[in-house]
Image (cartoon, rainbow, N blue to C red; front, side):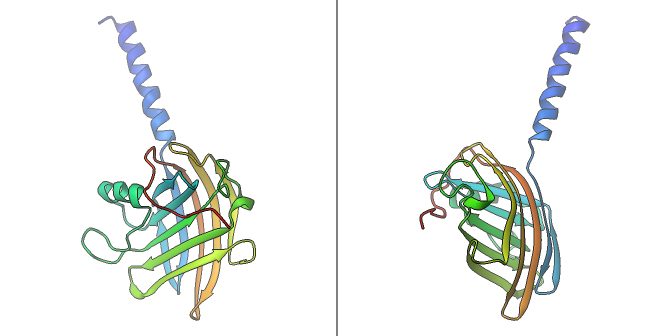
Length: 190
């Protein structure tokens, strides 16, 4: 193969690798659950296309590929890892566009939240928050297309007291929604 063609093909491969790296999911969740610190850099997203809702799963530990595949179908994050040990995680389910395709912070009306900290089974909680009435949770930024294969990006903050325990976090994410839709998820009706 002539050198010019070889360089051209290698250039195309390099561009494809760079584009794939640029499109990778990015997420950071950090804060405290009942006084226990956490930093999460692993995440997965699921979409329930019938309702235009999403579920986001943030984890301190890497999420195995087979668990991500199951999450894509169920939209239910697991609070135990493959070794059956507790994991530090946050699960969020909401309608980024209020039932429509275009995401925006003002469109989110209800958020289901599940949290778990590996250090103690007592630091496990679930909430159903109604926005904007519930001021504990705020979508500071939210954009993207709520459709299979779309991208969703945002920033979510929380400061909530529950059972005399304080939960605070900042979550930043930019994720690609899977092509495959979940069998169930949050509904977007009032």
